[in-house]
Image 1: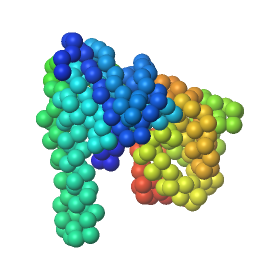
Image 2: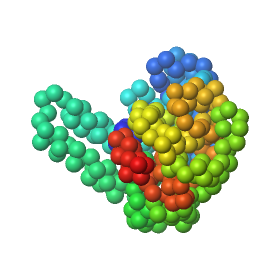
Image 3: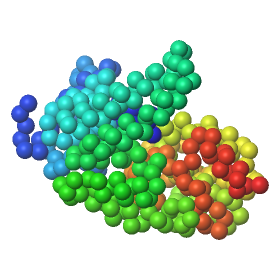
Image 4: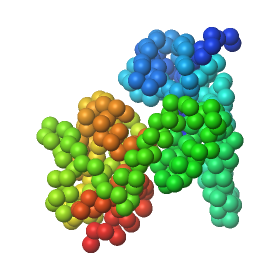
Length: 331
């Protein structure tokens, strides 16, 4: 989660009311650049690494810049003011400054942690300082969109009760933000995909063109890891070695993985999936994926370990924890 916040930022005058100006100056940026705000896209042309976007938003929103190949360039908050996107990060408005400052602090801690002259005791202290720093930054920004941005990065690390508690901390004004309203509505359905709840069935087109049905995989008596990912998601690709190691050990022995991709590009999806020897499916609708919405997926990687009887037994297993969890259930 810490690295996700750092990555999100590294990738993240006078204006009319609600008006924003995004000034992007990134090394090597040329040609068509796409600004995506929710489902709306605007295209401008970058010259000598520079491109500017102007517009109006009725409330702060998440924004993304994509290059000519539709690869992510930056992620940030689109809100009134001048937003500066450079190789160093994103600054210029309240929310972006808060997240950028936190990213810098976390990066400095990571650097100190990995320094050769850092003792084991110092590493322990550094490790223990990450969460309080993130939590205190969130607590200090529940009256602006920086709090929403941080919460979006933390969701997959939080229990249902922790998410509810965090949402309740937002100011009355922020409680009226569209994202918070939607999250509160979605919280009502979260229990269905929490450990102890029941899976939600679906059918998707498989990577080979056939139909993939989750209940069919469970009917074989397998524990199924429902894994949400995308080829463009760095943290997702970092989890692939752990998925491969677990699949080599338990695949075909009562364990299966169903990878649901949030890609839009079929070629990039299939190229990335080629080294993952399990079941793959996607509707190639990105964040608009019906299955991602069904499971209330707000950030990736995200996964659910589902027992043959349809019970969700574990959620969001990362790194070595994945193999350890599967070992508990698959004998």
